[in-house]
Amino acid sequence: MAAPERPLPGEVTATALGTWPGEDPVEAARIIRGELGSPHLPFLAELPDRGVGSDALGRTAALLVDLSVDVQPYGWRIVDRPGKDLKRARSALSTDINILADVIGAEDTAAPDLKVQLRGPLSLATGLHLHNGERALIDHGARRDLAASLAAGAGSYLSRVAAAAPGARLVVQIDEPEIASVLAGTIPTSSGYRTLRSVSGQEATDSWKMVIDALRAAGAAEVVISVPDVEAPINRIVAAGADGIAIPLRALTSRQWEQLAGAIEGGKRLWAGALEVSTPAAAMPRVADVVDTVWRPWRQLGLAPAALGGVRVTPSDGLARLSPSAATAALTRLTQVADGLNQLALG
Image 1 (tube, rainbow, N blue to C red):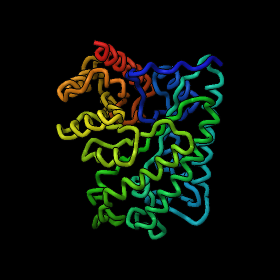
Image 2: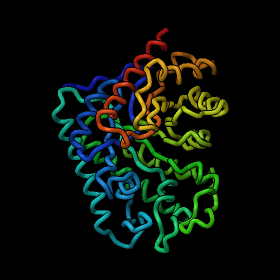
Image 3: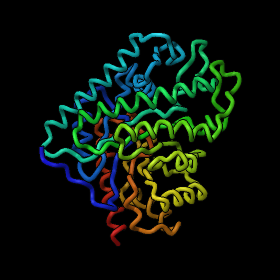
Image 4: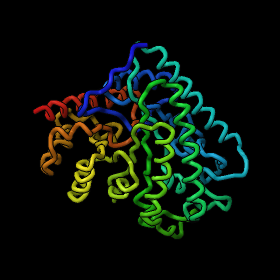
């Protein structure tokens, strides 16, 4: 296999957030790696259409060390011993890693980078339930144990991926889709009659740092935290030591852009969710329009064009709700947007 070509310094690149339509991991790997070749960032796809265990929550729960889960009518529950649902999740993940190794092995030139995704500790605690049916988020000890278990399992996961992609620079995206509600105390109890107490910002920072440190020790070259735009805890993510922030741009406030600008000037990467995919049937936005969603606020904030090199462009959401052809078109459009931003960065 030819040596991978490294991205040029300061080059805008493209990636996606991880989910992919359909049930065929071979097809997904080939399309993603074909569309996101060097200098872009291909990823190990999540295929939720395959069912239980292939959803984002089950996939991450399969990584936990000394904690087992199964599926109940209300969702994933922490249990005393592994059952068929956990075995199914682990089997699907192992299959995906093996297929990735085969696809990479057949390539003439492998991409230099590879991304994997996992659910962050607080959103994991929101989605997993205790024996009594309540969310694990309700209990401080359960939250602490989940973060520690995830940190231990994430490192082992990264080692397995590294073996499947020899020499690749490994990037990890930590997804926290529930973080605004967790910090605001608006997550409902299992009964739905009240809400759970808010988690402190400091606990969020500490939990993320624990996982980030474990990932770095396992060889991660870059770790970003992905959050929604609503009440995004940008400063907390920076304090946790993440290398970057993945966030959709569609509704960012001026204050949030200012926080992002500070993070960028401090050396953090922006993963800009610039390509709107929230409506599956919507037409693909024009390249110029997507470029403008990044370039216009960038210039308004006085950020240097050369600093665009720290940007990765992504869709605003996962691609699983699209058709395979539309998801493929989204990747193509993202690489075109990256090219457009690179032209602006060069003046």
